[in-house]
Every structure is written in C-alpha cells, then in structure tokens.
Image (cartoon, rainbow, N blue to C red; front, side, top):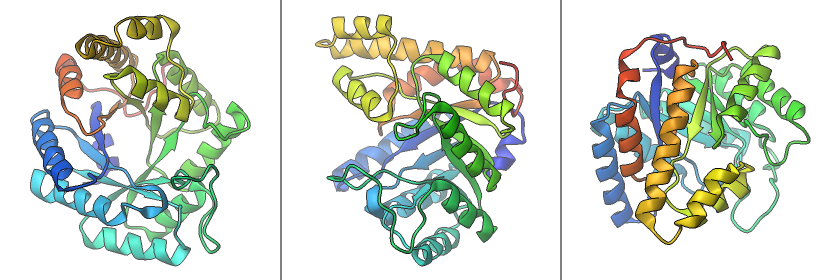
Length: 300
C-alpha cells in the first residue's frame, strides 16, 4: 500500500526507521527488534541507504523482507550519492520488481572520509532532481526530508524552505523531518512551509535519547539543538544508562503527545535499530491510535 493511501485514512501515522545491519549477528538482532515492534502495528517502516549506495542491496533486501515476512508496509531510502542517472533508473526498476511502492528521495550525505557532497558526473545534484526522476517513473509514492532547524549546508531558513518546496513541487506526497528536541522548531517550520504553499503532510521525526554522547554527536551532525534544561539533566546522569533512558523516553513522549494534540499527522521514530524506547513511548500514545485526525497540520 502506498503511504498516500495511509495518509488518506485521516488517522495519525506511526512509523519506524531502521538502518541495514552490518553483519549476520546484527541482522538477527534487527529482525528480532522488528518482530517486537510489529506488535505495536506501525503503519510503515523505512530503511536507510548508505553513503555512496554502500548498502543498496541490503536496503532493498531488508525493505522487501520486512514487507513480505513481517507484513509491514515499507519505504526504501534512495540517494543521489555515487549513482548516475542510468543507475538510478535501474535501482527504481529493481525496487519496483521487489514489490516496493514507497521511496524516500534524498540527496544523501558524503561518503565516509569526505566532507562535501560531490555529484556523480552523470548523476543528480539535488534531492529535487532525484524526486523529479522518481515522479517521472510513475510507479511510486515518495516522500522527502525537511529540516525544522535548517539543513546544515543551507544558506538560510528561507533558502532551505525553497529547496523543500522544489522537492514537494516535483511530486512528493509527504515530508519527514530531521530529528528535533524542541517542538517550537517543528511548529514554526510547518507554519513557514504552509505560508510558502507547501500543503503535504509534514511528519515529525523523533529520536528518543538513550545515550548522552551519542545524541550530542547526532545533534551536532544534523544541526539540532538540545534544550539547555534537558541537556543539563542528561549530563547530570550520563554515567547511569537507565537514568538517561528514563529522561530521554519521558522527553520524547512529552514531545509526541504535544505534537499529536496540536495536529501533527503522525510520528516517525528514529529507532537506531532498538525497540525498548520506541515501545515505551508508543505505548504511552496508545489513545492516539484510535482517534481520527487531519491529514495535514494546519492549525499551528
């Protein structure tokens, strides 16, 4: 089923993001995590794509396996990095042949060891170009990424939002945001997007904090700000993993409740291939699973 069809049902969507396992042991652990999260009946899951297409085969295999074996609708990430236009078309053909109907079209990060994005000589330079190619294929529902606090390479909030509009105008059915830890960034982002004419659902991305050093590294990489009060609380217990997890889960659950109460079309959880934190948060949001809501967040 296409994500656009799920959106049309008018209920909040709950989704999880995974990354391809590095070895056989990690694959076994991931499938166990997926089976645990399956009990929570996610609307869909997405699987990331390594820099330079380094996990291309694993991504497609895992997305197909999740859909066929676990019975959960899946979204394959696809990036511009390291691929020619012809290769992208071949990948789209392969994805379609595996029964996958949904894609998240991204420019992608530079390969490990490189600091700047370099397009393939015969490839796509921007996510908007990739989005247009996916749309032209005509077989997929696809989403794109949005950045409540601005993409780290964007010149300004306004320039970044124009980039988003070009991706949506290419035919995207939804936007999934980068992680954030203060809901004000999301609500402001949605308001600015609506003012610019972006009307597709904007699904907030939430990452439960379970490790202080890890989340500080992620936040720096993606330009997300951790509220000072939350940061102080986490640093104060950083040597106690259980205390860190309790604080992180509590904060993420509070974020999710406010987002849904104010009309967010769902929540996309960055799971880091673990189930505990996501299970705890989604259990606390059980009541929202039964309520109808707007497919678009407009009342901000």
